[in-house]
Image 1: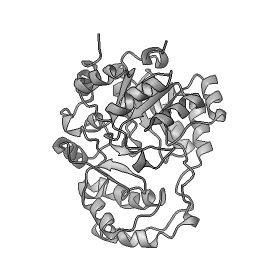
Image 2: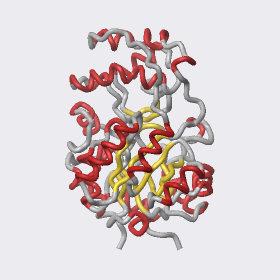
Image 3: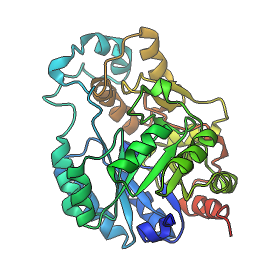
Image 4: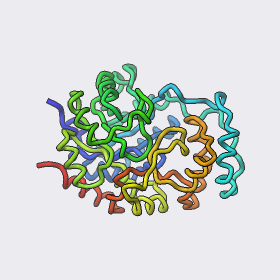
Length: 348
């Protein structure tokens, strides 16, 4: 018999906060955990020291279980020595100019060392480590389990879910093409892995023996009820929580989520070099029109140089407006209200 998420993670309700990478906040993560769900915090790009400090801050904010999230390498990542950033920088020149920023000088590395990140997470031993863009190796699974850390893997296809179970994860997120943010495919190209939530979840449930968490297009009690009807053990929700004031989304981003309709989002590589779903704005259109996008993570680092300043200025046209296709169903700016709406859809 498949364990419940409540038993597996020590939570009260099978509601998981989507990990937002640069938009995560201690406040929102703690709020979801305190409400009885599994709060999540995205650690993309964090150094080992910053990971340790973040987990400590989360523990100070809540005594309840929470998850942290890391990106695994897919093998196609470039280093500064691999890529000439000049063409992509020139393509983004109008965005730098608008903000009065000089053209950035490439760093020594685009990403922190993964082994150092994993060591920091295991030393901190959060209740859950969630992973995207791959399956964990045995040298991660065994140490994590020995420290009492549960593992969640993320799948965009049935084959990925099967690979994750074989690797030893404790639960699988089945994330449909409706979901906002990056498409975290790792066995086939993301463009060939765009399976919708309604098609994906029941097939993953049939293919694996670990709990399945449905993600993509879930923003209210109706989506939660549907996920359980498809056989899911719980749900992961992003955009509805991202709209709340407890997230790190800018006011302009939250306003864009509030105004979103079913056709508001597109899939693009413009902002990071990897396929992701978001609301189009001038930054995305400028880069796509220029037709020059560096590979990941070079493009993500480059865009990050103007996104950070744009975020500080509240310039919504120059940041990444990640959003899912159900963002228009997100009607509250308070995390507690969102959580209550979601739990109303849990059967029985």
